[in-house]
Length: 397
Ligand SMILES: *Cc1c(COP(=O)(O)O)cnc(C)c1O
Image 1 (cartoon, rainbow, N blue to C red):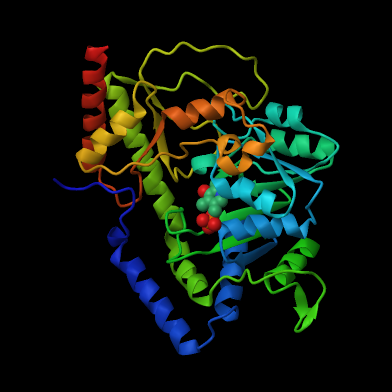
Image 2 (cartoon, rainbow, N blue to C red):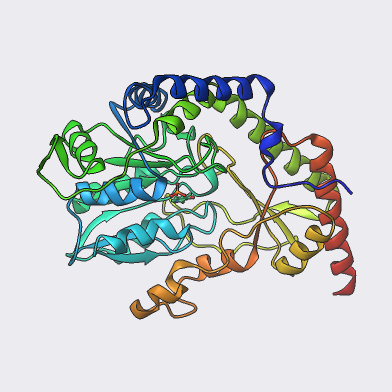
């Protein structure tokens, strides 16, 4: 039985592998392992790619979020609104500054932070909102930026899963005041270790973040702020430079894979596109009819990066996952427990039923392999297995 993994680093093209080896040799020869020319060049290339004035390489996506908040002097007494259905780092970074994460429910159509839900959570203490471009699908930036502007708040984009995504003709991560990226190996642009980036058009903030990255100092041994060590390794910057030229091709393959999944699932007759459409533009709430037991993700907005291809199987998600695992297909649940129900946040409410969309997604979603090197044969096999399992379940019901 051939395994179908969620990510297979062994399948990156030989040419890209060669560029990575060259990058390693270059840094080794230079002897410059901290900041320096590789980091500066990487930041310049990223700024160009993203269409922003400033890009600052940092130690991880988590640290990008933390530094962004700290650069705005957000801390104790402040509130920051973020989705409950996201990776932990979004809210963990808020809490680490001493500010309070305020959770909001997601849109049932695009699964991103719903602007209407953000409005309901605004208070006199709100300082910022952090939309997440979940799974690589752009959040409703126009509406979210409008909410931010009306209320005088900073919008910090968590674009960790969305390097290369765009909406309204603009790359995500460059639309809010600050945009945070992760280069964790499974992201669209993956380092060979931890790394992250902050994008911004604001020169003064960029300068402060550059200082915060090295203990709050612009001039050596003179500390204007209390920062820390949040530097990106020169080696990771060099690796990322080696991979940046292939990122668009990789995204195209992810989009092709998403289209192949959709085609094969729809042809099976057992699956349908999710009947819930995006309501971020403020449409009326209508309860859609569910005609299928297997629901496919929709792209509601712009250029999706399909960092994850996430289906919903309300009947028995965990059973399906076990079955696929026995058949050698690796899957993942992003994320089994919404943040408002995490043990460390239970002291701030977090009652079950508070965020119905987040809770439903946490119960029903399953991420399938979609990485660029996946073959169409493998996609067919994954679909066949899922269809077989769901048909069997359908007969039992
Ligand atoms: C990966 C991720 C992060 C954190 O990035 P790291 O580089 O792992 O620290 C933050 N937010 C989201 C939504 C992510 O997917």
